[in-house]
Image (cartoon, rainbow, N blue to C red; front, side):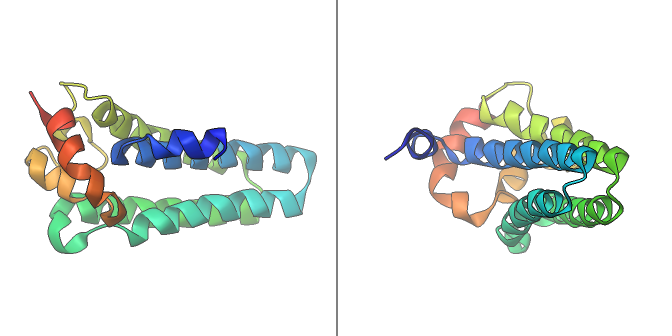
Length: 160
């Protein structure tokens, strides 16, 4: 098992979500470099990787139990998908930079939850969930592939 596999093996579900967001950000920076060097094939590959992550996250939302936060995340992922496709098509550094800012904003909210920040409540997710949601409703929106880690993550991240 290599270092990257070992690191992933010890992460909890929330940390894995943050890692996926970090991956999107890394690939978007790579796409900017590809635009600047004029490497069309590399730009497309970088954006393809971002789109794969967005598709993965979207497919694992639990809309049936996630309610408003799941719907908000679904809309966010769809908007980011469209924006990244447009940025790649137009080779637009400003659109790629905007995508990075948007993804970082939501990533930072996930990060607060993953480190157990006691101030990380649903109101910490202004672009993702309305303040009226309970902690249980917010965690219900997490991807289904993370269900096995939710019990531990819920108690650690949502304890006041």
